[in-house]
Image (cartoon, rainbow, N blue to C red; front, side, top):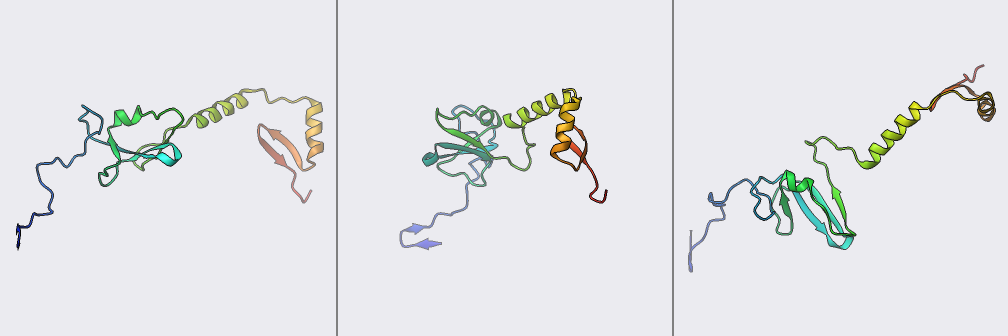
Amino acid sequence: MESRRGPLKSAVPSNVVSPVRRCSRTACGRPAVATLTYVYADSTAVLGPLATYAEPHCYDLCAEHSERLTAPRGWEVVRLLDGSAPPRPSGDDLEALANAVREAAKPQQRTAESAGSARSADPMEVARRGHLRVLRSPDN
């Protein structure tokens, strides 16, 4: 196609550029697996799955650099999970699990005094085992 100024350039991408996106970190040539963006107003760095298109204000990171990512002091890092990666337990999940294991390991024997006070607090309760309660049927 011709214009008055000469031939129009094609908008078709060149085959010279590799279709595989690489890590944005200097001297790292590994394939990118995640995209990092910053929300400056909230002092937040958001790391999510690799974006569909390369954006000028986003950074593509390889697996190693996305795992080791840290944010400046006072900033928060939000890691969005993609559907293909298995979810990793958070610190809160691990703490809740440790607390549940400690609670289960405690002796489940109660004194007659505490058993009597628990039954008087709830007349429908017949027995208790850990956090589970056996309740009397309302028909009885």
